[in-house]
Length: 65
Image (cartoon, rainbow, N blue to C red; front, side, top):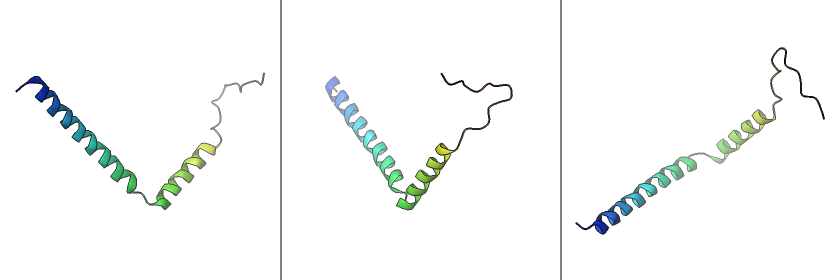
């Protein structure tokens, strides 16, 4: 078998493997209902909006410049 045939077959195998990975990710993404996605986004928003925890004892707060 010539080297260009081997390279071509390896390329086709790579394209097929990439297609499988993309299809799996798409199925996983589409498995969520819109309400589930909305709920996740709302929970992430509330987590990011929470004030940070109290600083450790002995830590000085940053001074405004």
